[in-house]
Length: 515
Ligand code: XMP
Image (cartoon, rainbow, N blue to C red):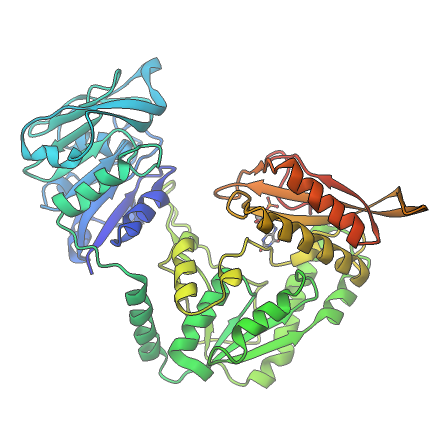
């Protein structure tokens, strides 16, 4: 399988570059610029390198630089933004600050034909088109052997190339969808310039993983804490195909799940996948521990600890287990190029596991996949769509969506309201617009009138946010009709609720969850 290296210089679109490459059925990996040498790039068999953008200026000593051997070892290179400037700099060209003439956002770019092989990079792109720019510095002097392939009004070298050495650069970002012909440019680089084969397919991934897992584990017993979220569910399905009954998938129903969620997870796995599926009904023990606890951080701690205690209690039932499986995915493990530290998160989908359970090994079969790829694998393995495409749900569940004391009665009220909201979003076809949407039960009661009677019921909050990364989020501009229908249904169908309000706060200053 041909693979491409995305060399990370700390740009904001690094993951996007790798995803775009993979969308074209080419396997791509991201590595920090200071974690791999040109010799290793060759040794490890990469067929092309893409240098990412980054916030620095190449002409400053303290900025991230790279061994200039990269452009001499015969591997095709595409530099993007900072990466393009770095190529020019390494090859002996000049880079300067554009001062107030930096470009940001959609910008018209004009192709300059050179009638040489360098034109391949922009082949099939009209003379003028829109690209996405985000730069303060620019390539002010071309290095020897390079040709100018495009310009904008203020950027004289918006794309450059040396066809002999197969080294190319774009000042703009082809990986961003606003660059109208960005995909074409990346395809030109990968297939026409680097001659890469598009042979990265999810079916192959599944087959290869299954074989590797079987060989590696050879009859060992594996434990997976199954939360019912996308990653751990897909992990369970993949392991089931590889090792069947040797997998013990433990699903703890803590009583803080959404309406019918426990049954959905159980129905998806029990009798449909070959594995030892263990569902633990732990509602009472969790709710007892949470009784009277108002502080959200203490709740999170209690829930995490109770997970551990629950696992301890069933460890005898499961027997001796050598291997722990985790649903870690690629964005959790990428080393960041932004600092010198390599940040590798160890990701627990549920609140950690007991130290009394000792494992010889950890297996993370999804650690090379992006979320959308994980979903594709899940569907191919036969998991139901509603499980695979679901929105994120926090580990502490509804424990962070009930303000004031948590009781079973309040959780049931919240579950019903939340289910109605989700149904109405689905009916309106808005699941792709709203990244996360749910109800929160407040402890504010207010007066209402139902029939001829005065009521004094709960206030429920509807929350919907739109975001790519959940670090920042906009409140979703849901149509009034959807809000109205949801409000009417909630107040009609749930006796205890008198009032429905919609949260119109973005993150920041608010967070996504209320607690
Ligand atoms: P916040 O509320 O921090 O949420 O803006 C960002 C994303 O993280 C989820 N979230 C959690 N997930 N355990 C989790 O596993 C938690 O304690 C937790 N708190 C928030 C939240 O649902 C959103 O997707």
